[in-house]
Length: 186
Image 1 (cartoon, one colour):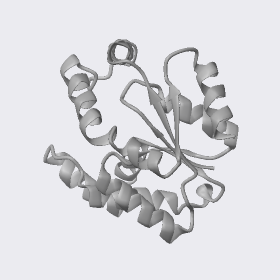
Image 2 (tube, helix red, strand yellow; image 1 turned 90 degrees about the vertical axis):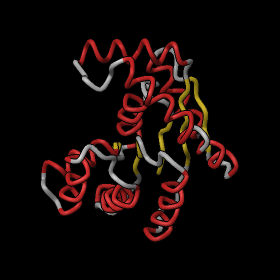
Image 3 (cartoon, rainbow, N blue to C red; image 1 turned 135 degrees about the vertical axis):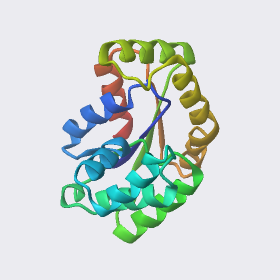
Image 4 (cartoon, rainbow, N blue to C red; image 1 turned 180 degrees about the vertical axis):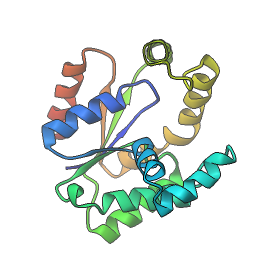
């Protein structure tokens, strides 16, 4: 099973990716985790990313795409994977399509989780308090939700048009949401 898990920040993507990873016995791959791994291990890709991060810039799509492609080529992805946090824009969708074709591993589904903005804001405030995350300030949260709405939400239409989109309400009991996703994936 090869899945994308998509949705705005705070909707529960990481939680559901972890549960689906256990259910299907495939790795859940977060682009944030990929960056942290490459930075920590000072890989060539990590060093390139660090140069942008040190300047306070976003890592360009080309480098993000290289890091994702490198991760998807690892042995533990042979039976499938779940990508969390990628693709984030139309250019990354094109890059992902190309890399999956080159790897001979077509996408099965894009799972879209959704929740009302007020619920997302409350979840992220709670996460900030519990985890002490400095990136979960009200300003940063609002900016990330705005960026998601502008750049990433439109990608759902691409996967819908391909017959690959599975939409699930991200509000409710974690286990109930997980069972609904699995049921919809067949």
